[in-house]
Image 1: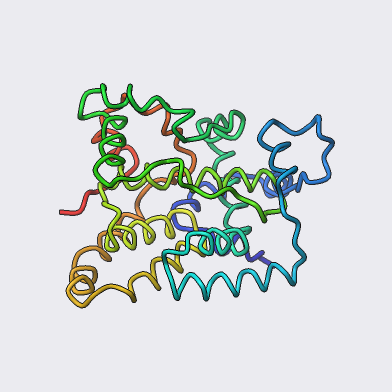
Image 2: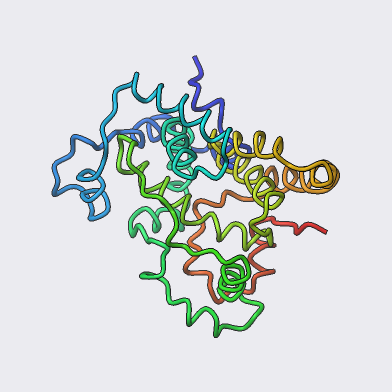
Length: 268
């Protein structure tokens, strides 16, 4: 019988599935919570100290409660984060498989880079030529008055490998905005959530895309249905998987070349 996690993969992650032996996929899903500390890397050891253990019933309650809270108030980033952790495990395993299938993704998993003001030299990014991805990202942060330091820490996932992937997803969210040339207003956020949903398969992204659109004002909703939604779905379906992209090593790449490589078409 075909497993649920195999049948629910996002479109961007399916093309390589048939070429990977099933035994390899099974081995990739070994939970490492019982591994000796010396076999864990620095991120995994620190995560295991901070992780909050929850039972399946508590996980169900947290998922239900956070989904209701996030729906009632999309500004509750803590509830959105909780929802992502309590509903995203299957999608994260799929993302792990995708990353392990590429050389760039394997480097990310081995090095576990972080994106914040302590790890990235943003002054340097601002000095790069304006047509580079690094300069585009720095300009996006300044124009939208956002900071990479605002992402919440992961707490509820059992496996530290998956905890890093959720951390990576959160820290790369603004990078995806910059690559898509989407602002952080409501229309931009909903459009990016559709792209991320189709690209990663994370349930919280689908929830944010669907329920975020409900809160659009009438004029925004018309624009969303006419332009943003078709554009987001088209991009989400055709783009390469974004999670295996080592963005930090693409700062000096021409941003339009990067978009072409990833299959990104800007909204016209």
